[in-house]
Length: 334
Ligand SMILES: [Zn+2]
Ligand SMILES: [Zn+2]
Image (cartoon, rainbow, N blue to C red; front, side):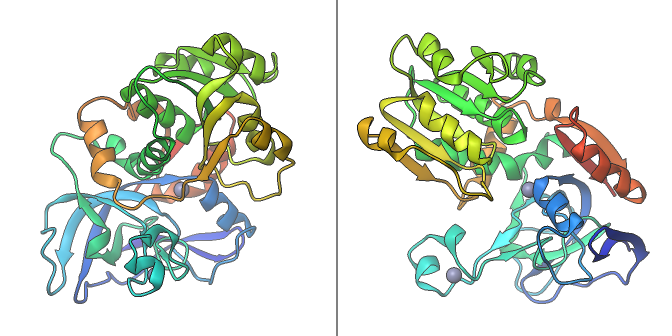
């Protein structure tokens, strides 16, 4: 098989490798599409240390090529979305049902080889059979969509409530649609106005570029009161977390699902004064089926988010495109 192998920071080579064969409990997936995200870029650039050589790629989908002994949930020929994280299954967190929080979690494409290849070997429990009729590009968004489904669930948003989404990248544009499907009215707040017309097309009732004015004022105007009921933060920057606190009304709920790598200067005075509830939301537990259902029902338009496609041989260009302001989701099609 052909694979993109990372040998050191920024040293990514297309190589031939022996086809892996599935052992007990494993599934060999023929990769049909793999998405790039900020995590891949941080690994590629060396910001995030990994062991080399590594085949990156954690957002991918494909077709089951072969299964090992004891695999019952999928069979050859099935189309599957891959859940690229698996927990140890035996620690206290796993046993109490918090497998997304397991400290011995294995991330496919980060800790072990992933989907920037023609074939990928993964545990059977990471395979979610896809409903019929979804295109590879729709299905490709099930991983980030599962992240968002969990975040929105943790907000406990109710029909008729107002919600603000911070960030208009893949997660923000998906969150907008999931919040809409739960009956919320959505304001999207973003650093620039680049994707705000797309946010509107995907269901945002109002949008605010922070370059044009403060988010808090827009949130008051939009909600007709002190701020919005619910904020979903997807940008993962220290400033975006501060922004989230500004947007919420007293008694509001904030869900953080972007991962800020630097400390944030949140004024906790306002968290107390407004009695805000702030919760984190870490990847997903069992949100893949719900994500795929939303795609199947057309509640979420995923295809509008795939802006670039490259063959595996052109993966270097895919990394360049991932950094370009015009890109949302960049796909590698092996
Ligand atoms: Zn990712
Ligand atoms: Zn565990």
